[in-house]
Image (cartoon, rainbow, N blue to C red; front, side, top):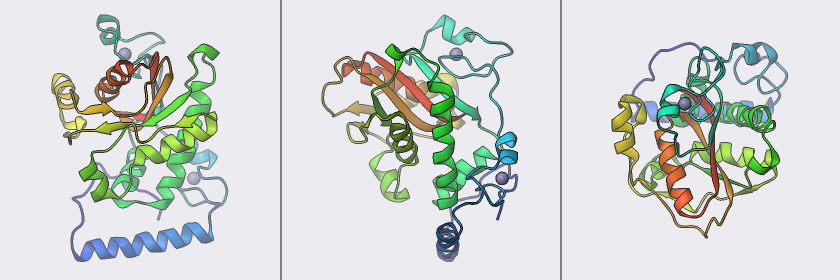
Length: 254
Ligand SMILES: [Zn+2]
Ligand SMILES: [Zn+2]
């Protein structure tokens, strides 16, 4: 069924509803296997996102180059001028609004294979559209997904950022490291918190356990950035591990 607008995600399913959801996921998986060439949003035959739905995606006007906040005109936002973030650049494709928000939630909480296919295509588009114009010396040579905490990973069964990072690494033809960066403790959802609380929430939450990043240019990938506090915390950790440059890539900026 095509996605319809809904302002709030419903509560997590439990018991019988969970089985019903699993049956629906199986039916969707079968549909995907039988009819892979249809738009994941409106189900029209053709590419994963048809031209009409592509035009419906919420635009992000004049994003700040370091935090992706939309601005009235091209430039750096006052917050980033006052306090430059640890991240060298943040590339975001769209605003976090309908229908992209529903698609991201359908994937994260419903493991929708259709949403996964569309989001991977959109991650590829962000990589092609936003990363290519940069100078060669700024090009990332390592892609790292934002990790989930072990408990949440077990509960969900997959890390949505990992799927997006794989596609970005494949498109860019660079290595992927999805083991070195770890979330040492579970953190609250950033969306419900204020700016200061967000920074506190992610402080010390991540650690690097991989090899020395000696001078590497790292691209950290996630589905959504709220203020960029998580990505900034990660950038600090990766710099400590030796990275020379850290950029972020997300589908949507909330
Ligand atoms: Zn469509
Ligand atoms: Zn900014």
